[in-house]
Image (cartoon, rainbow, N blue to C red; front, side):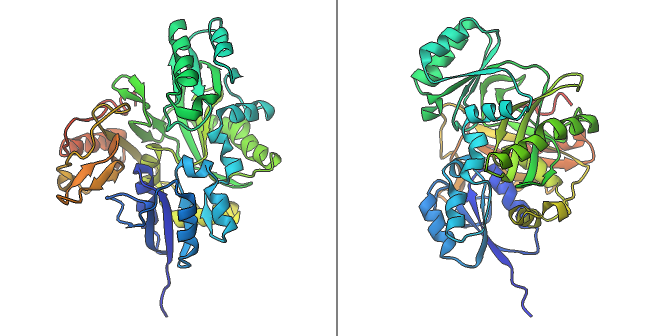
Amino acid sequence: MTNVKDDILVVGGGGREHAIVWALKKSPRVGKIYGAPGNAGMGVIETGLSATDIDGIVKFASSHPEIKMTVVAPDDPLGMGLVDKLEAAGVRAFGPKKAAARLEWSKAYAKDFMKKYGIPTAAYETFTDAKEAKEYVKTCELPVVLKADGLALGKGVLICNTRDEALQGVDDIMTDKKFGDAGSVLVVEQFLTGYEVSLLAFVDGKNYSLMPTSCDHKRALDGDKGLNTGGMGAYSPCPKFTEGVKALVEKSVVTPTVDGMIKEGAPFKGVLYFGLMVSADNSKVNVLEYNARFGDPETQSVLPLLESDLYDAFDAVIDGTLDKAEIKWSDKKSINVVLASGGYPLSYKKGLIIDGLENTDEKVNVFFAGVKKCPDCGKLVTSGGRVLCVQALADDFGTAKRLVYDNIKKITFEDCFYRKDIGAKL
């Protein structure tokens, strides 16, 4: 008797999606994996579809009955309602529907949601008029945080230390539209202190299963300096995040969020990301943001810790049976560092030849992000700001960190840069 395996379509083409594909390939239940669009390192069947070609993806998935699940990983297609349209076409899909993904695609909605359901978060005001926003930031306490309401590739947040920075920030977001239409609505938020931690959870609408915590490094340069990026590296788990903090977060944040979305008529099914600020003494926690999907680059450190079957976990989320699923995590330590193109997150060159990948150690994973195969020379070249992510797993952070940085030295491309202090605070 033939053991028939399920084919999967994964939407997205970055480092996060590469890590998801890498984990799915371990499942004995998984057959072929298609990518929309995929990338040169994933080893998937590339469809030629972009992640935001909603109609094309629905048509492709529904016309290939051997595809038993479509995994929607990035924020944009979730916010565009791809899961809704896939399900309407009879396609089994992993990810939240548009109404549930609103926790990410509208910062204003998320803040109002937290206020409504008593979930701890920073004090805030919301503005649709730039003049009114400026009047407010002239008098508010400093530093202050400005957030573009919509999706901005993880870059639509400005921390302003002076009044002039805040006024300029309002212009950048609302008047000059540096983040596009995401800046039509502005959230002005109280600045919180403590340590940041990312907590991801599988959620099936009513049940949840927490993943190991992780700590992202958003700033482009060492010492948390430079511009905000999509993330320059991450480690997992966070050593400061004790069982006591976990219990506090479950009671005050996770459970009321999951229950609140049911009350909103938009049960959350997928991966829910809690961006948290925990006080230095671990006595208080506030939600900085929600994401409606796996984080990037947190995923590249978290998923290598998964010891059970990712496809089984996805199935349990879709079926609403997470309470019966057995999801196991390693107690090892994981670190990843992103290799970026010079100039990122602003302007940068593309098409730069990448060398040395064949020299990396088998003990590390190299997840591809902004990489494609040159049609003329057949070599791998850069195609984005964040190019590669090197990750290692070990019994202790020191060993994992050495593995990552020793192998980064073997990889070269013009104007490559990376942070040399990922995990320095450990």
